[in-house]
Image (cartoon, rainbow, N blue to C red):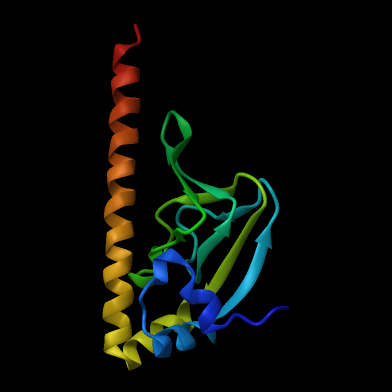
Length: 157
């Protein structure tokens, strides 16, 4: 296994301009992972104990909609964060996620990152600000998908 370094993390857009000290802390909680196509990373409602920074490939976020089955919400790709539920109690996934093709990512131990954030409020604030931006984007994408699906089903005879 290749060791994840602060330098490797600094190249990821989600962590752009984060301090070297904070990157070094995060590197200690990370590992390189690869997922094959169609691998389900997590299920809606499951325990959120990890998160990922995508280096290559794409992951589809999905949500079970009663009466309609799984609905694609958004594609997460290179340079993006996968997973925000790990930071907010009760630490349960709000969506499901499946690899579209081969995916390479940095995987983080969420419990360790939360402990570091609690010990270093500056790190906690920095990550929370970055996560809130992602969260707002994902909620907007969900809203658009649900409105579109609702409009299409209302138009059917």
